[in-house]
Image 1 (cartoon, rainbow, N blue to C red):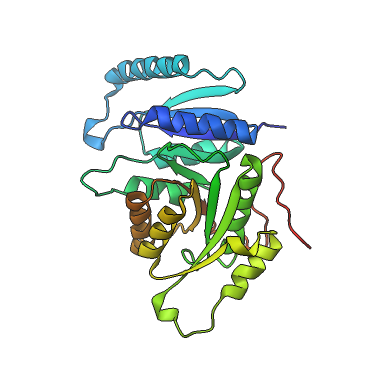
Image 2: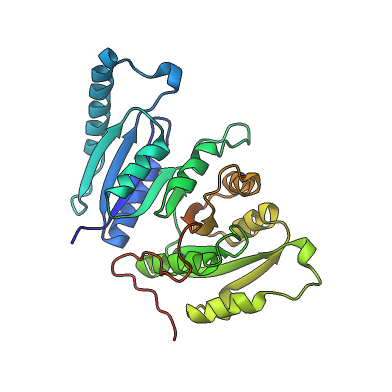
Length: 290
């Protein structure tokens, strides 16, 4: 049987040491192979000609050779490859189609003057059928603290809350972490019947204690980053749609990137079957109460 892998996507401007450290940590937790894909892709006006491509390829090989010498992990199987043309999202999609990939990891792009360009990350989120982890590589607590935000982002997918919660629970088991479920109630929903019963039902289904279920009031773009920062979570799992141009959802991503330091795990459930159990990682079965 093909071994499960983690795909680490790196670019020259990324904080490589942080994303590599996180990828190695999760490869150990998930008993997975680590595939490193170096994307040295320039804009259309700067792409190399066919005569210059060999020089670019040699440069990429030298870069990957230096990276492999930097990584000391004899217990983990590691492969490397490089991509030069097209887009990062296109190469990730092709890699996922030919590989048993449990997770894609990418370093968070640098923030300049408090502004975040979420477009590259959004392209990856929309195109990745494996969970996508955006990381700053911040240290986790000795017992990691995870959260899963449910039922507020991708309302086109009725199976989204369960799918996101299951991914969070599966990762919790693999990493021996704690998991909270978070539901955001919009201000205009005040006075309407609460949907807390859905959150409580999800908690019972996944055997998550009541004190780890949270309903917070406010707009998701403000309330969620503030709550996540207050609780000092190490990782937040969140559902994402694959519809292009969704300004509201991309705006939420920008808020999360700007206002939180935790890892963000995006689960694309827009085209998944609500009745189908999402992929789980080896040695991390989800405990579901019948």
